[in-house]
Image (tube, rainbow, N blue to C red; front, side, top):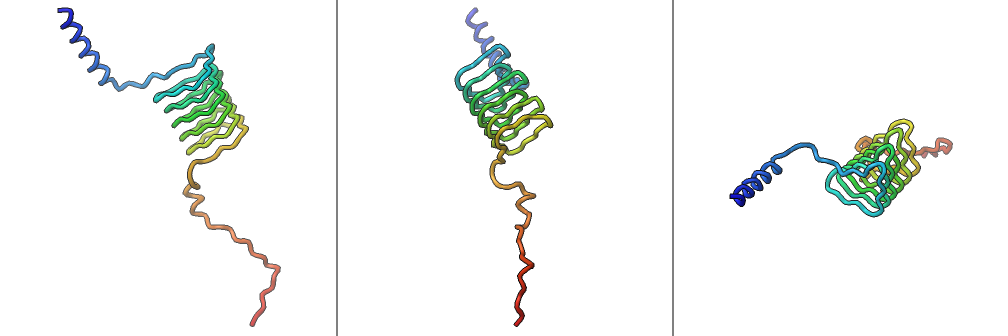
Length: 149
């Protein structure tokens, strides 16, 4: 009988875990935590402590007291704290409390007034469509006189 109850419980637990569509739970590096090494995740990472190493994830939130020293690869990066290193992201948000010390390669970017950036912000791919449609400028020297035939 115990075996049957356990089997029913396990089947029920599997069904419930597959059917849940709630928001994903982030992995949190809390304020008093220091991590040395790389972090890889398919989900969300929230850093309020210190990370010395590279981070690769779907979404990264570096909190006001958070600090990352290393390369970041993510679809979304919300920066409220400090990032020392290169960021390769699709969507970048830099808050007014943030410090970005390094280059950021992005597709879209939003920067609040007061944010500190010491590095380059480089857009991925080609120029934006509005720039692609602009004609090239042509310099003309009007001081030269043309000869008539």
